[in-house]
Image (tube, rainbow, N blue to C red):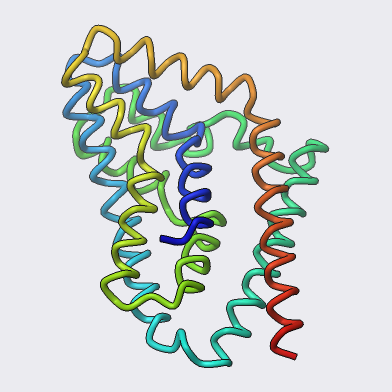
Length: 221
């Protein structure tokens, strides 16, 4: 398993919007059904995209051209992460995301009276692959996996990516009295330290990807 993909999966797990939505679902009369629908909706978009990407791109994983291509992708993603980190730290970007699910205004309004289909739709809308996901796929392909190994790595990454909603579902089933309190504590911590966590994570990931891409391009040259 790619250690980079594991790290990116853990970073992806701490996302304000999913935590805010899950916390809201826990306040309803049917929290288990809503959290489960949200989790399944997210996995329904996240897993097929990742599995499809590694299977298609993995077919050419051993060619020198693909290696150079992945190095270029590393540099591009790394620079994008660093640019966004600077923008987020200075307040020039990321302001809309500070409101959490407010970015999805229409969906959020409808989720004031959530139903299972709406929770599933929210899972899809808020879990589309982003920067960390793309970087994780590149890291997985760097291990030159076979088809079965590639799929397994994508599954592990997604298990980490959805660890907190899954943990909330387990809590609401096994310890319903504590589920809301624990999830809200995690969400509140993420809100309080959101800017610091995002800037630090993006900086670490950005520097790592740029360095790895530049080293790879240097070796190829």
